[in-house]
Image 1 (cartoon, rainbow, N blue to C red):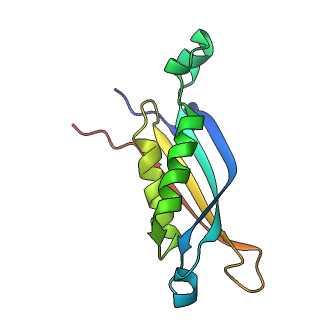
Image 2 (image 1 turned 135 degrees about the horizontal axis):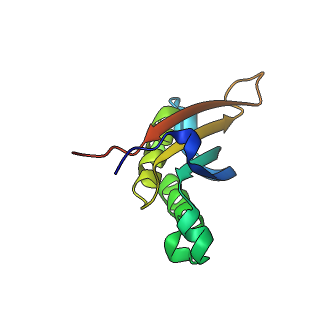
Length: 128
């Protein structure tokens, strides 16, 4: 299969997915769950699902979101970078996903900022 350029792919966006997890490097951060907010952009081709109107031909974003929430809530992370990377791996395992952009935000991480975020873009790696 020929790799796609991202601008030629369709996009599914999941906005402001709020999940509670252990995140941080300080002892007080490791003692209780905190909110993190995720923005997930899935790059895919939705033409088959659009034609058939059948969930079997689509990226099931409801199922995917439940999987991400379950994983993040049970895991713990020192860094937003690690959280974003793990979420991207979950998304890229789904059939039809060509790439994913994940932004992980930690509200209140800095005293004078609303939040801090890390954004990554990961393509599906096609093994030859």
